[in-house]
Length: 558
Figure 1 (tube, rainbow, N blue to C red):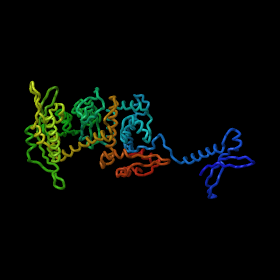
Figure 2 (cartoon, rainbow, N blue to C red):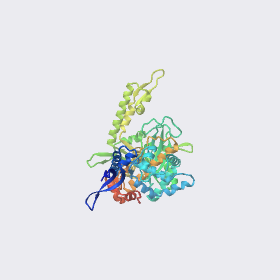
Figure 3 (cartoon, rainbow, N blue to C red):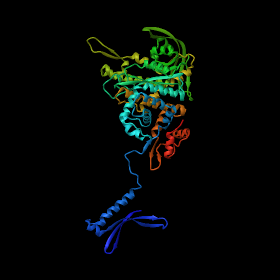
């Protein structure tokens, strides 16, 4: 109801009072009661108040305004929105019992913050809202259900500590994943990528080298190892100017030593990591290998075998269109390796599977012709040698003494690339593997490329703006752990029914807004959220959630 100013005349004086009107249920009508007696007008005027009625009417108006605003929620300097999409990752972390091992670092380090809280919260924040460390601290961490109790300086100190010990944490998680969920290292997939930095000068860690994204900025390399089921089990960070090829050997050697892996594993990698030393390493380690190999680099004898139409088998789709053709052979092949400072040639028995994909051939031919057109245009305009870049392989540069260098199109190189477009060669030490098994195993290598894509896109891992080497390594570790937990959710809990991009999208979109007594679920409806709700028996699809239900979601027990 409302307040009003009541004026009562008594014995030639006017008395004022503020009354409150309200609804009286037993009388089923409006009633009044005195809120405050104010005395007489004459007394206030005698005390110097020029217009008591106008003065107290303003008080009544203020009371009515306050009454009106009483039930209206006001904006706050703290956002009512909370991120909940990390709940499954938290459940996995709890299941792995990582905290008790991370807490051991307190024995030798005088932390003024909880290291596990810092590690886990940074992983969760990176999964639901990837952004810079400053923005993470000021805008994301406060909107997790349990805000973090550490300062921004402590965040940077903790990140640097994690980075300086990143290999220990990778090993710790790998051991726990093996114990809790199991790992299969009968086949291991390995690949490398690099990340560029928005800086001009190199240092001892960020060095200029061949960038996967054609960036001229300094880069840092990262090698990633997956098990047979595409679960990350190893990571190696190295300066950007170093070769990728030795990284495979270092990571696999360290991993087998750390995890006491004694059985045979098959190393699967693309042609960028296929070299004689890696092949020799696999054999000397008692392991096997499955690499792709450039057809253009084969001996003339092998090229003749590639182009022969004999022995090819075809795989067709339901409409009878050829998806790809393939044939295989088993033979001894020479490899020149370095042993005790000397180069020696060894003969290794391999199975080689050759495939030809018509769609890939069409795509490659289009790309080659486009580069040739660019090379011709540059040649006509007499461009400098440095301007050609990748298309320089289709050009001959001839230096003539005392005269300007001549430039001509290298037709032989063009014809060679067009001739072998669409062919792919897989080589393996496992001669008893069927052709289909070799093909399928190698195709799974795209999962590791997907892991890199997750890091660079879904987790916004690059460009990297951190400056200190340990902080950069800590940043990479956080992203690695986010991928690891997501992969466990994807493969171990959801049976690979949903792609990684869809899972990360759901994690980012699962938000709630706190109202006066409930939480409003802002998550878009999807089959994935419905399946997660059924899988974990949680009210993930409820529009309104209570405090108890929120706690049950974030205390998920696997």
